[in-house]
Image: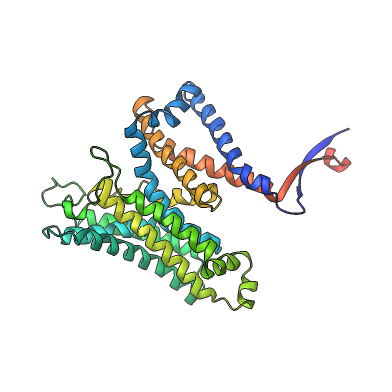
Length: 361
């Protein structure tokens, strides 16, 4: 008697699988990573240790981890607002870049000003730039009905090319030996460090504060309730009198401001100047963080630590194993692929059924 495996719709979504899915995705990513390392002629266990454990064997590694967690958290919390409302903003990367570019421009303009108001002004302007960039997507969606997935992706490339134009052109350091980078920012426009001799700066506090604010907004406020209802059922939200366009503007502008703050915090923190690569892809990785963390503040914090670790693991693999740094993107891609695959089991279950005669033939 022949049997086959099929997918069967569950009567209701499985809460167990909703929480188990990220765990399964991580396990499958580790197994696939081990097989990948073996195919490259490396010991799977040693390579996985180098990728996921070696970066965290000292205090410097932990400070570097949270240096990368900060921008991921800021972007992820903004995206959580959008995704809760089923607004598929893929533009956090562009909003991050515009925040860094705008804040960096102001920092260069105020290079000779020695005052403590410079840093708050730079941070505020960077957040505004990210917010305005997201506002373009909000305008196109609410005024013209443009799909936000397409518009935000395209705006990412425009933002990147603006950055490239700036560092190769008007913002390039005239004393920088023709390298495509700006002058270093002054001490009055750089973020204070949390610990001396380490790169971790106070942007981690911005990120943790954003986690608390967005969690309170979504769980304790009327506008958070409206965003959740709009995401669950737009027709019900309209029937209740919720303003869909207003909520769309709010979610996108808030996301843009947080991503812009992440970008300007990056250039005034670990980078200290404008370069062509102020972001290693934090805006895109934050999308994985949101779904891996199940849009819950604790889950998002843990997921951002895992994604930050993949950036560090890629650097360690490059140095210790002579493997390309692009392994970071490969691991992030596998994680997203397995997460989406495992999420299918939330609404469906695998059952074994008797194969029909036609199927057998």
